[in-house]
Image 1 (cartoon, rainbow, N blue to C red):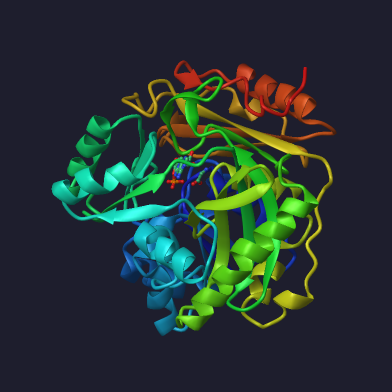
Image 2 (cartoon, rainbow, N blue to C red; image 1 turned 60 degrees about the vertical axis):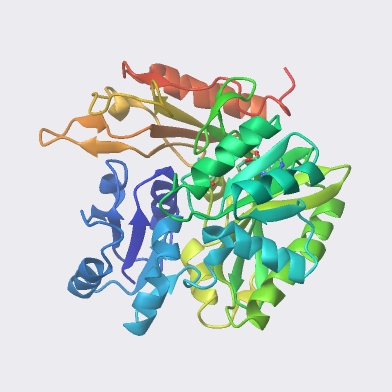
Length: 422
Ligand code: AMP
Ligand code: GLY
């Protein structure tokens, strides 16, 4: 079977790597992919939101299944578009994608179906904000309703800060939506929980914890994610039961009952405090960089698992894992998430040893005409290692990044610091 993967990050490179191991897979096409995916598959240089152009290539290349990595095309309705054309596409449709595409939608689902989450209010004007804020304790969380590439959330220490952020969103700071919500600040530790769903049945496909801040000790600006490890150490069996019972099961039921059954990967961003999980947000896709570790630890044939969501056999599947934990460390361009240079040569990648337990997944990389690998984005490489413990895995992952000759590289050396004991 020929497969198309939409996206160009470390997540998509790791999906490509995993699919390459499947005997069910014939050819893989990455749309648009990166320098790493070009080694395993054929890259097709198409805008991921140009569905017509993608459709033409799907026909040309006889692609039978499309796997969508990032959220934007999902929220824009890529699944609905290709379903109409009778092409199998793995991911939630436009309506179901509102779980990530609209925080107001997600909050309403939580309210209507009794799913634990932070208390919230929609804000519609400055005056109303000034009144409603008095019902919250500080800090409060101000959020844009729509997609904002990780920049739509601020934690505000006082009323002045909150009003400033609220006004910016009401005045159109984000193209996706002018709507804004404020939320109670949740204390605790964050963890990510992933399931695969066919709309009715679902299976957990792993846990992880990521580090979103640019600086060591989780300081500085928010990023797409600077590293992650799996499994999460705080999700005990007992907490997992609660996550499934109080959050996942009612969500799947809710989506079915409103006529938008949830198909695809659902990623719950959770806050866990005193062994009680609360939903911070839903993502409608695999996390990046969490996916990179999950793909290294998952034993199942990924294509078989995905196909089971189309032919009603998901409930018969069992997920199995390599027991060892895994870590991924992101190497970014110096300056990210602010300004950074691109098109800088990354040398000696060919000398890096990769195998089943260590991989170097590419994100923002491209190949020059002469075959050189150049940086082409904020997050550029992901050193992903599984080993008997996280300390060993981190040491190896760092060693790989240390070897790479790229003047602009920046990475954190402390990924997993909350759980790695030296
Ligand atoms: P989101 O885009 O909703 O995932 O928010 C990004 C990050 O902001 C989360 O990963 C949390 O670290 C933080 N955050 C969001 N909402 C809350 C909340 N209600 N309480 C505490 N932290 C939050
Ligand atoms: N690593 C966070 C995300 O993918 O949203």
